[in-house]
Length: 386
Image 1 (tube, one colour):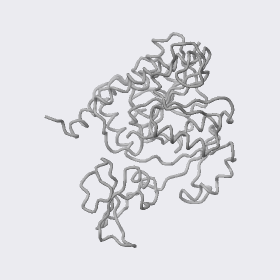
Image 2 (image 1 turned 180 degrees about the vertical axis):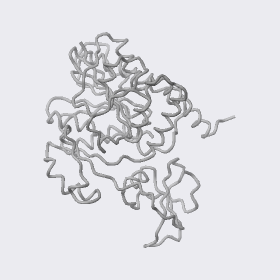
Image 3 (image 1 turned 120 degrees about the horizontal axis):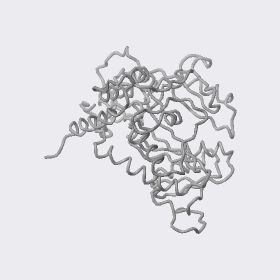
Image 4 (image 1 turned 120 degrees about the vertical axis):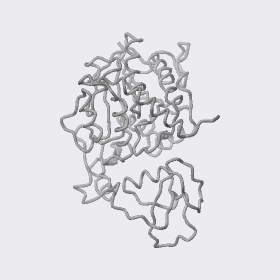
């Protein structure tokens, strides 16, 4: 008999709770800790971040030039709705208006796509392309209640009643950012096995007039060549790169707002194996003295701290190094990393979750904890090859 969506969700929830059971409690009371932490985290992830962050293309503009344009996107005056990070000079955060809790339910309802619904929760308006379904009687000027198709079960053009209640595709933002930091000099290689993602990355590079980057549709788990012959395209010989960003495919559990857990236990358990395949390739491609940055947008320790511990255990020439700037939280104890190493990796959490986490788990909290730290949940580790 086939399992229902509810069965898959419940089993996945139980699995993630069991993973969090390994988090080391600072008072020694481990009873139901995994369930407590995971339940609280899931609730916090259902609320969008307090601000939307954008990056300024510093190859073309000064950050001050963008302020008049960005101020109209948020609430209040230009001086109150924009926040600038003291340690990240090309970053601007726009305070969000939503989510509101004083809404009145309307008789007429419209259904919007999942991503459109996420934008509405951050204070955006709804435009026609985002509407999946609406009543036939809808006319200009009607007040409506907006429902988001979080389970992605609504067919475009639906005109009846709605009874239902991700992994996000990247668009090359990190590739463009790295090229900008390189001042569009040197050689930057971007790999992805998805044609759609490679096309989006190339479009973004063209939009920002980046010329130092080359994109290849290629499986990164096969990017290390068995020969020493120099190549201009993948697979590449060993020690070809002095800097590597492995933005690993992950369960994407840290995205916000996130209302449902749509992946099965089997799905969740598959990511660490795949990530290790890519880590092996990246370490082989890295030159001695080179730097490897490993990042995910998930909160699962099996895809984060456990992966770092695995690298340090399997490769005695790979060492964790300090990150600059260090603006996040330390790693989670209980997954094989020593305290000094936990302070070298960066964790980011929804702000409301941090107080619960700090009550039960020993973590380092930044002194300057502001609304800028109310983010999705993601992870960064930085290695150097000795």
